[in-house]
Image 1: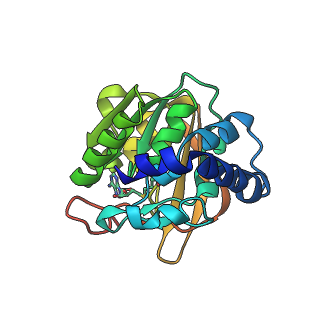
Image 2: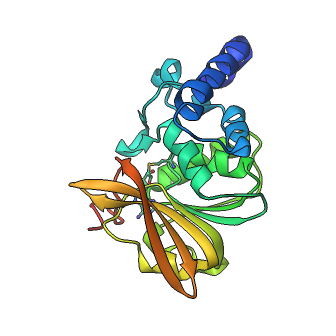
Length: 225
Ligand code: SAH
């Protein structure tokens, strides 16, 4: 594939601009977790973007991907990963596989990842891509992430990479006691990146910052709410 060729020819240059991205976009905005910074350094974002976006892969914004979806901005991927407070070995449910970039970062952080994507072609191509890049221990599912993945619950962490007006009840139910769930909460009027922690069965919310994610969809493509 084109990206492989590019990596062979320009690998040093791509590593260099990836380190710049970490310094200027991620550390400069306050992400400190050394394991997150190392994971961001390991994952080749240029491998996850479409061919025409390769030259912009390390720039400071989300990029378009297949099915009208997006690949999240690098800083937001790093911030959400930090907010999950992963030490390694956690079971993580990710909703919205997309191109698989965030999935790769979670895997680099030592998580056992269960990832759900609503578009079959995205689920399939992310699985193929991550397999080719040598990632193991990632479990893929095509379906509606609002239902979670009950079979493997409970999860130590849940990360949703699309926005919903409210926390989907199935995700709260599938989060382990003491677990953390990170998601953008809101609709067309605005979204807040929110961290939920589960304590005594109750979900406690803390809003972190304003964000702009694609919405949670229903099968067939319309907005879930
Ligand atoms: N995690 C990606 C970002 C993907 S954008 C990254 O690393 O860049 C959000 C993704 O959520 C899209 O791929 C979209 O198709 C998916 N999505 C939207 N609604 C969904 C649903 N109900 N269930 C699962 N995935 C959904």
